[in-house]
Amino acid sequence: MKTCLVVDDSGVVRKVARRILEDLSFSVREAADGQAALQSCEELMPDGILLDWNMPVMEGIEFLQVLRQREGGDVPRVIFCTTNNDIEHITRAIEAGANEYIMKPFDQDILREKLEEVGLLEKAPAT
Image 1: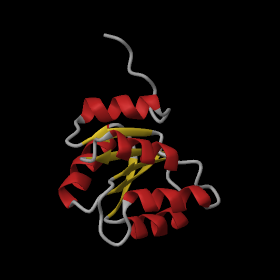
Image 2: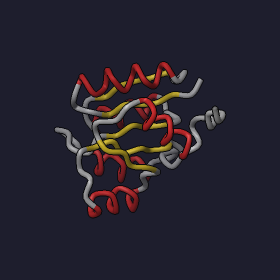
Image 3: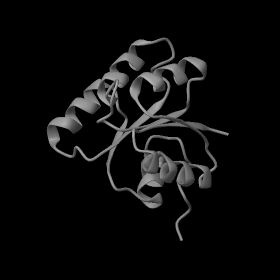
Image 4: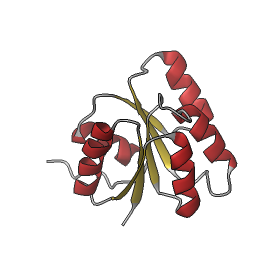
């Protein structure tokens, strides 16, 4: 079973993301900020990370920059999930090592599509 770490300071967003990811057969862990996420990654590096930008303690972009410098930190597929949808934020995220970028609010179809694009899910058969 693939693992996904949901990093967001909103408990509601974490709960929604957890439900979607578990429905897609992921094992899910949660962190409320970038520092807690780094600690979680030290315990067990996830296959994927759903990452918010604006958080207390350590923002998402800082977390991603630190993660990518660590041993094994190049492995997780990182999908930024944020309300920051301008080209500057998207460019910074991709340059820092994000694999994809989605806007809040998101739903299961959007998240599934991005997980397929980064290789964490098999493409759903055409209906």
